[in-house]
Length: 380
Image (tube, rainbow, N blue to C red; front, side):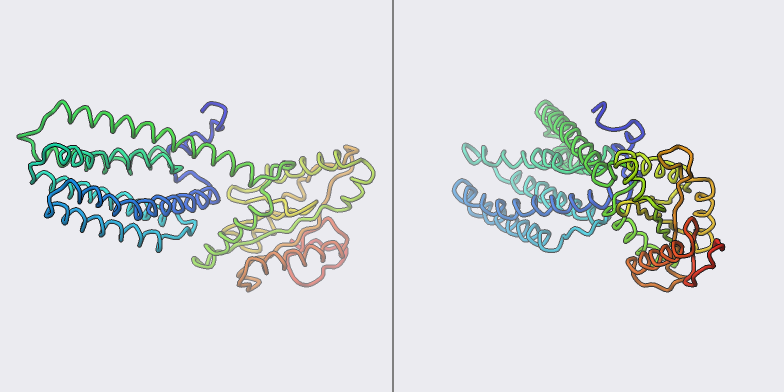
């Protein structure tokens, strides 16, 4: 996969903890949706095989397997009904655990039941087909966008479960077929892991393209809304501060009118680069629309946010297309605890209103309170 993932992102294919929140949420939702699809197929197909069992197996054996199949089908149906994508990886992991645990338990139990019967002819052939269930499960891993560590953690119990029935009958174990089957399972696991990593690679690329503004490289508005919603929820639960800064470039329309939109795009690009170089680790810059930007500042109170934004503004946001005139901005800052808001949209609205106060007071300043500053005053 050279060239598909930036070298700095290679660890994203190995460990899930390094993923940024939006990727984790989308991946978690996709995993749960595919768990439900897989479970639906198994819920429908599992009991249908009882028809074949009824034809070839003696009644006591058929009855035991049919009862197990009905229980398994009901378990899959419950998984379809109660597993819903929430964007939480822990929920996705639980859904996957249940999905693969159900057929794994069925495989071990059915193997023990079949081993107690002396089957011959077509009955023996059909009975041997039960041994292929682990192959199906491990091949099914390929539909999930999992990291290398996640693939190994999911596949290892299934490989162990496949070996367990044979190892339980150590004295009669035929090592050649067992080793061949286990090697084939390991090979399927490796192929499924590569397929899952390829899906994850493609997903990372797609999400990266979707969340970034193509001109400035800042996060898109939709991505910013999702990030702010997530950060606001975390701040509410923990009681930690969360601030936002609403930035509007001063007299930007004149840039497009006098120099053209290409020059305007270059100004926006330079401004975003200046902003991101001066922002603190953990702050998020979003292009909100046109010449408007939003900075999301987790774990930052109103005073800290105002000081940080003022520092960036005073260091400079770049220049206008003439290369001489400094680019300035009017900025409003709000913080959810200080401003006593209960919704992230209200937080943005307050910052937006303060941005207009900054414009009314003469532009090129930061406003962090509801009182309109004097024209010469910069609120810090």
